[in-house]
Length: 204
Image (cartoon, rainbow, N blue to C red; front, side, top):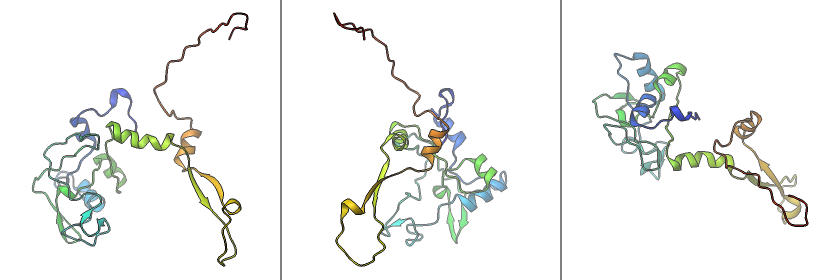
């Protein structure tokens, strides 16, 4: 996750289009990028093309909502990720025996994809709800689990008090964030120190 400084925050459709692309590159202009996107960032054919694909839910719809609808321009969603530009420009590519167009492209950054030659899904998070969803995992209480260790495999009555331990589970990003002393917030409340005096008592 990259957090931009105030002067570089993504605030317009033009900024989004400079960072994220959801279209098949021109094979003649960018042959290497074309190959990388074909190899790593085309969603597998599903729905009517392949109802047995892993992304299908109850053989009815794709959990990732592919194929996307055609969209001539990028649109900021209502408290969601932007609706990226998926133009119907006639460009398609054959993936696993099926011809797929821009509606099947997973959002990517051209520079990162060409640099690392791997699947990198790039999304823009700029609305209140999406940002809140990202940060709530840093601030909320630690996850807790119950577990028991029993060498005897025979069924027996479980004594929950003696058999279970209450433990903390911390994911790797959290200690890393705290070890490097990264800020948890950039907004601080203004606190004033007020002198309080009660008659015939010490000053507080």
